[in-house]
Length: 130
Image (cartoon, rainbow, N blue to C red; front, side, top):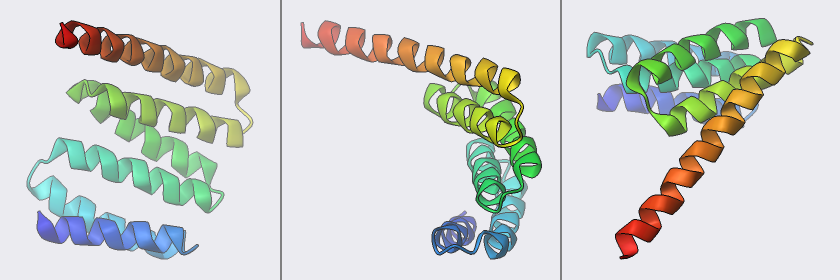
């Protein structure tokens, strides 16, 4: 798993250095390694960063496909923070494609999830404080 993390971090670095096309190779290798361990959470994260690399490259159609895969895993794992991220990223990529009605649907979902998560965090804070 450490090797997969190394490839993923290398990919992040390349995206931030403005080389998203080169980052894809690192993300693909990280994906292979995480798939061999069936690490669903990291697979979802890698799909998300593959979407980010595609979006930064201007390939919004590919970004949408990667974000949809990340979102499917986020839903499977029921991770609220990841669901918010993946849903909003998908909405943003749809904006890039000019598919505004679909984008609004996903962005509203992300906003609803954010509001729900915020409510639960506030509730838990006050009830935990006694």
